[in-house]
Amino acid sequence: MSVSHFKLTCLGLLAGLCVSLPARAADRVQEQVRQFAADTRFNGVVLVGKGTRVDYVEAFGLADAETLRPIKRNSRFFTGSVGKWLASIMVLRLVDDGKLKLDEPILTYIPEYREDTGKQFTLRHLLSNGSGLPDSLMAAYEKDPSIQSDRSAVPDAVARFASGDLAFTPGTRFDYNLTNWLLVQAILERVSKESFEQLARRLVFKPLRMTDSGISAGESQDIRELALGYRALKPKAERKAFLIPAYIVAAGGFYSTADDMLRLTHGVLSGKLLSTESRKALLTIDHPESAYALGGRVRTFASKKRPAPYTVATNDGTGGAYRTVAWRVLEDGRTVILMSNLRPDDAKLFDLTESLLELKQAPEETAP
Image (cartoon, rainbow, N blue to C red; front, side, top):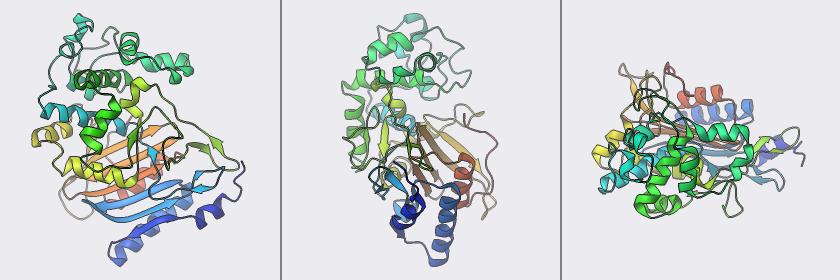
């Protein structure tokens, strides 16, 4: 369907605006965000907060171009690789419960796995993308994109895609690949005897009251308030539907809202969901060249207001047309969350994020 009146729709259907910053600061944030939205044709939600408090949130554009359903504050978006951070949190919850150990060989949890490699790498290696396993799943997808509809059982997928010879000694290199997360999902489901979705709800969503979040192998009519993915909205709408195999939802099947993402970042980084030891493990960088810790990155930025640098947990994700940024300054809890169903220009997206958090410059390392 043509959306030639897209600009008018965006102007008329801005929704969910909330500002509780001091007037001058609120005006600055609103001006920056609206200028960004105009320059990039941003289609999504921007939230700025501190701790649990939402200081500003605004929604732009369309969740469904065919029905002209607008994006709202409670619209749901797939979060891409932020799901890896969620999976790491779930692992650490089970570590706190004494059911998993980060440095135990995975053969302990999947005894039928090939012994020669299964005794060499651990959960920590998987969560930090340093296991040495080749990315057989992505290689298979590049040869046959229809694999996104594959509904093989998790153990079968492990045997097919995650049992290859090691490409390097575990822990010596960083290799960002899906195979690691297929094994993480297999271990979580094996140990808990629950599906990844059930476990996420029990360990994370329910205790943090994330009532608008869930796990799905792609877009579904069952996901209420879902913002549909788009490749373009002008000059005509072009859908880019998101679909992944169910055995890899640990890497990209997490959907959420801006408010729930704030609950997640606060509950994990400042709350009591994890023990002090597990929270430290989550934020400890294993691969300095990529600033990668467990399931996410931790970066240091210069500050505009003080001589000491800020440490920022930077969780970014892409899945199909969806793009999510969830950054939190660890020293004071300032948080910026952006969620979109029409992928914006990344450089402008990160420029806005850094500006809203008053960070002086970007770090030297770049994400893959």
